[in-house]
Length: 526
Image 1 (tube, rainbow, N blue to C red):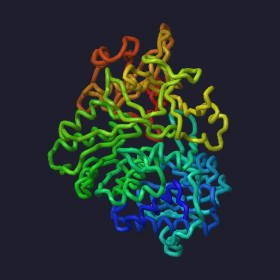
Image 2 (image 1 turned 120 degrees about the vertical axis):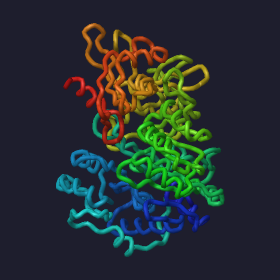
Image 3 (image 1 turned 45 degrees about the vertical axis):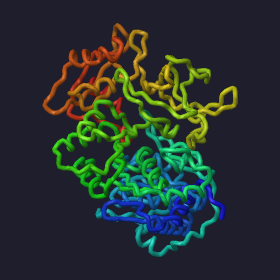
Image 4 (image 1 turned 135 degrees about the vertical axis):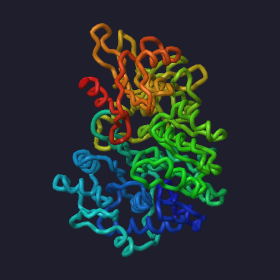
């Protein structure tokens, strides 16, 4: 049988090469590579028996759990397309994603499916539902239970031949508008975001070569990020395809003490966190000195900024830990590692094919500002949205195809790229452009700032002024003067905050992004 870069093919190769190797831990559930592969096959056979055809879409709506990973791989088994759905979405957002994605089947937790039932009548294309038991009492009419479905299905790998052209879709919320489905080929997402079969070295040159990872020394990755998001999902599959044991944090809210206990129990070598929002609580928890982190040698981060201040807090307790802080986006994949902050900025050394382009799709010179772009292994576009596809994916005069999702950046002399933020959020103050993320990173370096969102507010003199909604650390109340002075050596004068508002907690969107609309509303209400 000819193997491809379809993710199910890669799993089968690893399961054949190392069947009893530990693959997945999620709560009380444990799977070897053989068990994970067999259960994924049962998912695939059940869906095929329910009428799901190659190329059709199957939504997954669940918290982190073993069945999430099984389901995604099972959908790939039959050349269908998994659609990860954010478990924080309300009924209207669920209606949009399920309708926009043309999902014909849904695998979800019973309590979360109650929201889907509110809009089920508006989803005529959704014809099959599989329920994951999670202890809730709500009924889902016409659904089948996951374990019963798997028990009646075959574990055999007797599927039709697959292709690296088979689709992978990730819905991204961004900062504005309804979520959009970024559509990739399996082969492209594997090399752009899933490590290419060799996270720390050269990518594999054939699907069969991934079998070698079943002979690598055992590793364990503790993934605390939601796998329905790109960052958490990509780390989970990077771990699996490198032959590691992937441990999913299954709590419905992040508890740093629980995460560190799990790290010690499973002897995790890599800890995946979501930026400062998880890193700083972990650092505080480590301060009590009761946790065994001796197995840990690297902390990975994605989905939100991990500032130098947060890294320093972790280094105080883990002096030898390595940080794997990468820039990535649903439209670009994983683009390159952080090389340390400079004057309060987020600075990355990008992979080949990633650069900064001007409006003519030409690479800017050192010091130039433009839009971050990637060529090579990039998405096909946005599913069901040709207009948005045309505004994000471009072909240059030399025939190079680029993904340009809208992040502005500056190219530095040493080839590093400094991220500045989304162009749609840029603040124009007195004719000068200010990128909110640049100011947010600088403010987070202040010891009294726990979290922050920066927005532009109307200003009679300058058009807009820089304003920040700040969640301070407990027992502190930083002033505008203190924060401006702190940033003065990091940011140009026109970028300094002119107004602040302190809150107990900074609100974020359902996909964990900064909620700029909410932040502006805070100032409007005050």
